[in-house]
Image (cartoon, rainbow, N blue to C red; front, side, top):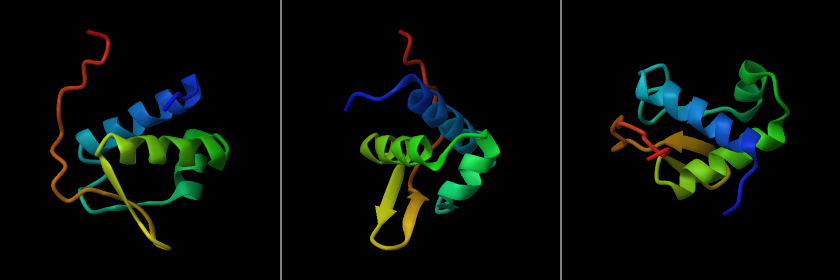
Length: 81
């Protein structure tokens, strides 16, 4: 999946919040709240959440939204290497 630079930055910020413990495993991620937090529209936030679901960080539950996977463990993200 090709994503925009904004979507990539948002996904990195969201993973950073999860890795630092600001968002706990099992937590529901609110698209409007994240959009307000990062001062962006909801569309790139949704794209970032879908991207993170494909990466195995999040789980989408039908008609409920996105949740951090319970078994997600913070990890070192070194995508530049």
